[in-house]
Image (cartoon, rainbow, N blue to C red; front, side, top):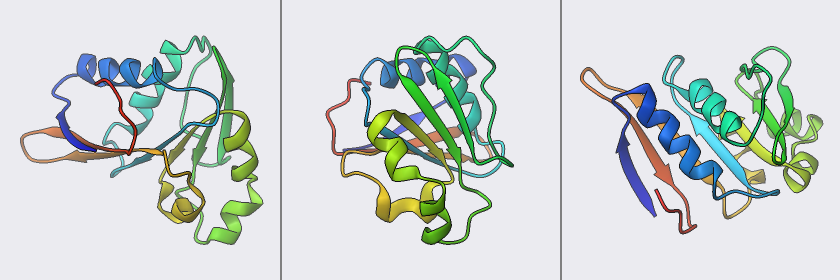
Length: 142
């Protein structure tokens, strides 16, 4: 399933995050891509808030991983600085996926490790719109 969704407000971004958050469980992966400032971290903040995370959610750009506890344990990776699958494996990503809800910003370098039911969100800013392409083989109610 592929859907193109117009995110013309922060409210719509949070509504999308809440909708997806209400349908995830341990072992689920959200793979986020898009240029800097496209909305990946804001989406993640809304997603985590809906799952009961009360602490501040930020992008782990320099430390690679933030962990949060809400309804489920959550692992939030930012793989922007990694160049190879070997580097990704050193983070322990496969083990995190099995035991948490996992959010991965800049997932492309880890694509071969992601489970078949991964929820892909590709954020894009055009001259007139902010969009997200949602791609998954799951039946999500959006």
